[in-house]
Image (cartoon, rainbow, N blue to C red; front, side, top):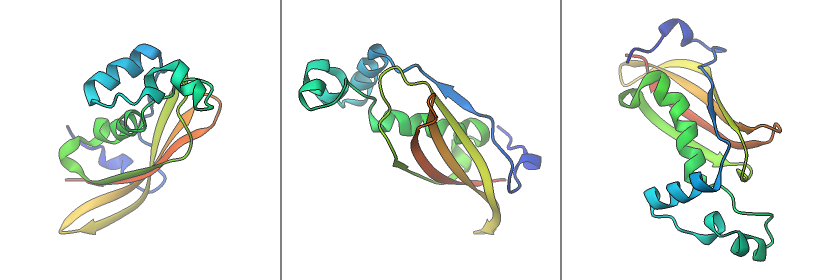
Length: 138
């Protein structure tokens, strides 16, 4: 995989990634794959008894999708750091758009790198995650 060096300057936008809608099947499959069987993600009665409108996506499912916007562009081997914070719950039926933009180009440990600002947004404009990644360009 080659990083588009022309796109690796402050202000550049990486290709968007779209995911969803989040379905009950998606949540059940993720629970099985991850081993996270917390009933708030898969049991509607449990979620409603906890005061929620319904089940909602696992945080790490959303985190993983957001990471793909970076790794689809640069590959896993170029990733130097990645972090995100959860801003709001990813609800059942949400369609998520993940975006990344270059905010800084710099050198570290002898290699050119870029710092990316990341955001995952639901179809209603609600941000669900915000984060940052650092990617090596060579």
